[in-house]
Image 1 (cartoon, rainbow, N blue to C red):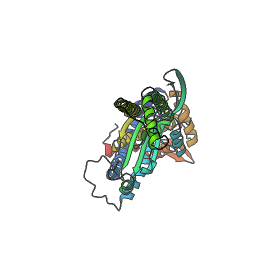
Image 2: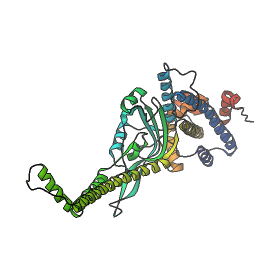
Image 3: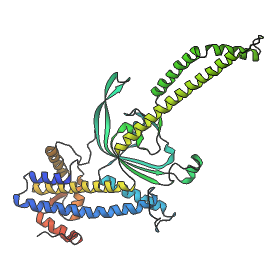
Image 4: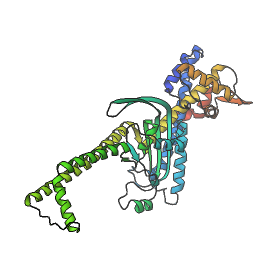
Length: 414
């Protein structure tokens, strides 16, 4: 498995772990906590602005919008605004340490059998653009039942903790030509969805236009039952009626010169036989529909517990997650650079952070050292000389951040 960039601890727990590490002198602990809060507040302000930009750029394409159209939006600038939204949204996903699901991963998922025993069909032609992002990749093992519970099998599969879906539908002209006047979706709309605990093999269930289809084994079960049951009905219920019908057909087609007379009892038998055959056909069709409804319920129940948010609501979740990741990266890099007491290259600091995190939390991460150092340099609390980085002392770092952002947050450190 690839090691993720995602840092799977809360920032509060990370700060406490730094304090408990005993690398900081006791008299600097409170100052370090205050500096961490100032870093958190600074990033919170920045991401609040990003959230507002996302909401503004997405508003014209939001299928759930309940406000009047924006005065700044026109058909002429629609493509530009869509591009602005897309690029900003991808930036947030990257900051939240999501990884793009490759085309190969998606094709593999579509080919693999669903863990929920549901076969789905997706009409990819409806989409103008489609991108999946995932976070928290791991291998899991589950036991599934086969042959009506007579056989149990353990399977290992790829599992994603979070999956974000970005889909833009085609325009109204396409849907009018292919779907008719009753459009299944709002043309030109862009949907954003966020899911949790998704097996890779079940990615197709996250598409908004997926439709349940019978698996081959389900068709075989129903078809076999229909053949056997139909044969029994024909032999036991329609045997005499079929002989009469065969004689009539032979006479009408000139294959036989012997006239066939039908008594009232035979007519009744024919009617009863036709009714039995019709009832059998209806029963098998109803069995097919019931099985399909059972699959659709399994799909709906599964999505109910996996869905986290939709459309504009996803921004709040992702922006909060991105802000959390950025805070943890900055705090980790600053703390270990500060307590190391000497200048370090980015590669040295990257290795130090990953080793420290693995030792403290028994978990491996692929730390984003370049992003972390860029933030600290932007804040002015880390300096660089000759490719090596040095952290400012805590008090000097507080002064630097106060000078840059203090008036915005009305913070005072005395």
